[in-house]
Image 1 (cartoon, helix red, strand yellow):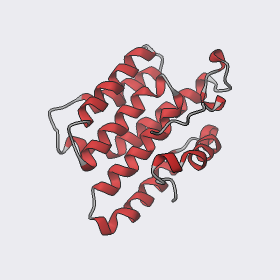
Image 2 (cartoon, rainbow, N blue to C red):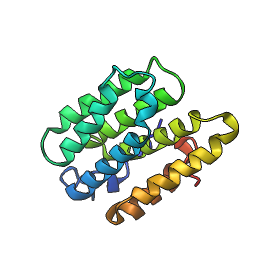
Image 3 (spheres, one colour):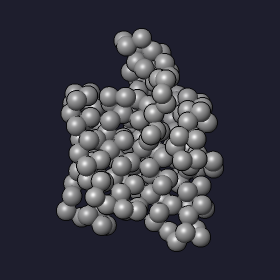
Length: 171
């Protein structure tokens, strides 16, 4: 479970009664796509003929540019998560990261799911003794990618949801 029981209004768009602007929603989507793409090779090396996670990342970027509908990106995210289910380890987490990124168009708070699963993928891709360092390195890389406009929002979200995101944001 990566979503809180009570939705944070900062991740609900203005038109739905929250405080999230469309431009910040798009930035969250693009950041989530970057997090997922950073570990996508871990899926593609194991499942080279399955395009679903890559398509989810492409769709969320297309949504952020206004080229497709939210429902198209959400569907692509669901397909990426379906690609993850039969797998284990780094490939599974990388596909889930792409799926979470894809559904940010529908629920902005999934941005943290994309980041958390990417960190889990990075941890799972190395020997157990190196997992903690790999996770911290991935978390730091992600933070370096944060646009200034959403930086404080995401960092606060990480602080608030770290416990339900497997404690991966301690970097």
